Image (tube, rainbow, N blue to C red; front, side, top):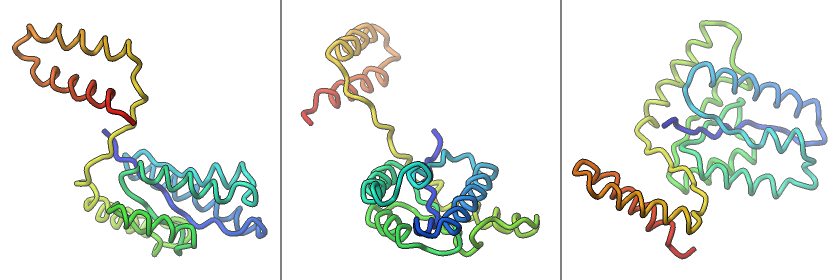
Length: 184
């Protein structure tokens, strides 16, 4: 299973569209760099919110949603040359939840063009990534099971009962059924 990284980058105020546009372009360059140098699945929900929704209407909702999504990631990656106020909120939330943070802000607002510098960034990235590699990956949310699903799982459990090599599978099915029947 792949690690899931939450990418955090400064955006800038809606009133300074030139700055925001540059920051979005720079974030895209960082995203490309990380895709090229890692095997992580990378989330950056703020990109959709900032490009498609008006900050004045959706700002608090966007931040709340982003924090919700951050909680489902394995670690936080901060880029972009500095820690903006919203990045500080994400960073503090990650720290409160004992989530590892990879900080690449020292490498500027976008990855360098020169290969020597890009190699240095990749080396620093690998060094920090080694520290989070041991992080247990978060479990993926599973939608609620219907009664028919639970019945099918129980039938599979009964069918596996005759197989002497299926103890692990039966135990896993039992855990799924138990979780599905827990009151919410």
